[in-house]
Image (cartoon, rainbow, N blue to C red):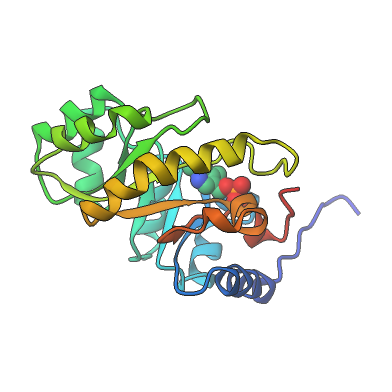
Length: 218
Ligand SMILES: *Cc1c(COP(=O)(O)O)cnc(C)c1O
C-alpha cells in the first residue's frame, strides 16, 4: 500500500452536467474546468463533458493544453491575456478572451480582430472587472472587436443568508441586463452557487464548476 489512487467515475461527471443543465432549461453552459478540472484532469473532463457549449479555464496555458489534446470546443480564458505574445497565441488557438482592464482593452484593440471577447463587470466581487457605471463607455471603447457578451461573478452566492447577492442581482438587472439586451450581447453570470441557490441569477449562460464534480457550494 505505497500508492494513493483516485478513481473517477466519468459517468457521474456527465450526470452532473445534465443535472446543471436541467436546472437551467434553455440556457447555454460554459463548463468551468480550471485548475486541471478541479484536480480531475482537465483533458479527460473536457472530453467527457463535450456536450457543454463551451469551457472556461483561468489561464492561457490551460487552454493551450486543451487544444493540444484535440479539444475543439469554444474555450474561454477567464483572466484574459496581458501581453502581445499571449494575445497572438490565443488568436492562433481560437480562444475566447475576457477583458477586465484598460491595459487589455488597448492590447486587444491593437490587433483588432475576430477573437471573441467577453467584458467582465464587477458587481461586487471586488476582484477583476469594470464597475457597472463604466459598462457603456467600455463597450464603446471596444468598438470594432468581436464582442460576444458580458460576464460577471456573484461573490457571495454560496452564503444564502447574505444579502450581498440580492444587491448584486439588482445592480445587474437594473444597469447591465438592459445594456446587454439592447446591444444583443449574451449575459453570463451563474456559477454553481448561483445556479443552485439563486434562480434570479440564471442568464443566457450558466458557468458551473464545483457542482460538475459533485461538490456542493454550500
Ligand atoms: C471558478 C469560477 C467559476 C465556477 O465557480 P464554481 O463555484 O466552481 O461553480 C465561474 N466563474 C468564474 C469567473 C470562476 O473563476
